[in-house]
Amino acid sequence: MPRTLDEFIGSLPKNERRKIGARARKVVAEEMSLQDLRKAIGKTQTAVAKRLKVGQDAVSKLETRSDMYISTLRGVLKAMGGELELIAHFPDRPSVRLEELGAAAPHRKRRRVAA
Image 1 (cartoon, rainbow, N blue to C red):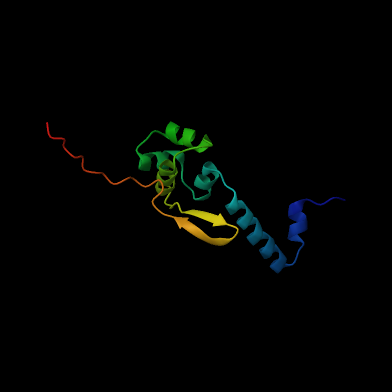
Image 2: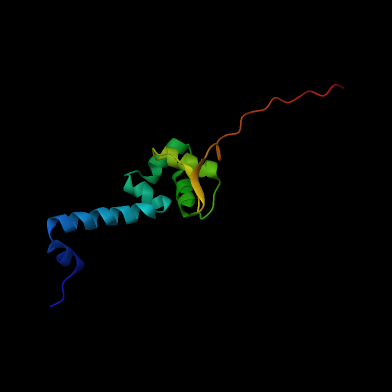
């Protein structure tokens, strides 16, 4: 008689089940949409919207976008209680953490032109 996956995993030794669970959590953590991430940390769209000072519908739209500004993504993650780090990986050199991308640019003083 066939067994379900849960039944099969349940029949394994405890340490094997622990390893499978740890690996499953790692795989899930590697690939998440913004919606999945928000749900995983227990936040509602309404709560995130409140912190972003936008409507819940705006958060819903953000979660379905495939492309956005880095500053927008940084703001959404901050509203969820997280932080964005950008790291560039290269095959022939160490990884590099990119700073200041998507951060608010410092205001520059405008020079007045003499009339």
